[in-house]
Image 1 (cartoon, rainbow over the protein chains, first blue to last red):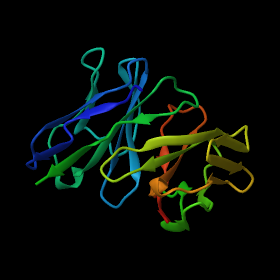
Image 2: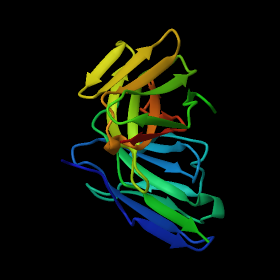
Image 3: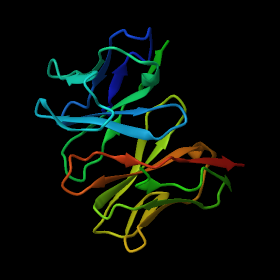
Length: 114
Length: 113
């Protein structure tokens, strides 16, 4: 069964450093998403991406964040200058269509900012 | 922002019995609702969904009920099995949007023998 994959599973970085989280969505899916879950809190939407551009972003997704689909398979989330409060699980998701379609999630990347 | 609420942080059920997980929402623009199951250190796994044009959807042991007038949905698991022990998240998306999911806080289900 096709699945969303994410690398790395765990990333440890120093405050102020740049990190890139990688995702490979399900191959025939057209819509891509990033969510995060800070320990003990809800899963929160960050950004949605379609047709090589951002469709929607949350207040969390400020200028320090960017997304890219550098080739036909990868979807990346970059945090330019990490802060302590960026420590969280980051989940990538994809869906085949936009309207009333299920999003399938990857296993997540645990980001720890020291 | 409490658009999707799961008021019970935990639920304990005996194996073989019914598990009922509840979810309330406040945004009347939500038109699609999903339940995800999550194990520790894993991503949410899709379980079942329901569109606002329906009031019930069933898939094997899982049934989701939607009461639009009460802005309430519930997930029924019958019969419950120990492997169902996980955190269950209710999520909703808005009509006309780009499918941004708004999640509840989750309910931890423990099914004991």
